[in-house]
Amino acid sequence: MPKIIGFGGEEKEFEAGELLRDKCEYMGVPFGCKDGECGCCRIVILEGENNLSKKNDKEKKVLGNDDPKERLACQTKILKGTVKIQYY
Ligand code: FES
Image (cartoon, rainbow, N blue to C red; front, top):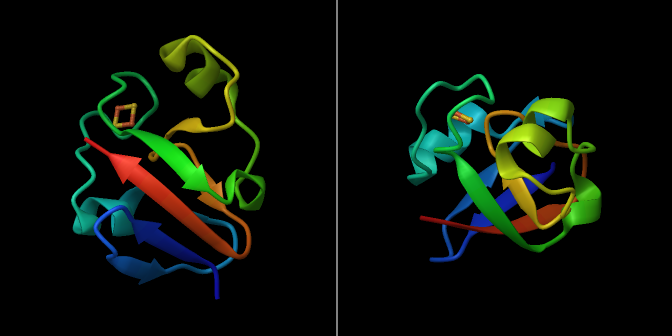
């Protein structure tokens, strides 16, 4: 099963194709709108960015870049493997 690991070592398993949103909120990632508008759920991908869905237009607009290491957890899906994240 795909898995997210937080920078404190916390882990959560996901279904392939599942949005990071709900389980990452449980891990402590802060959320606001949950619709790709506010930028509250910005995360940094420390490892495994190729295991995530491609960045969508809302992410590109809110984050202001196309850096695969910077994502919005409410818009990002995990597809496979393990992804390590940092959040604020
Ligand atoms: S919670 Fe607002 S952009 Fe993700």
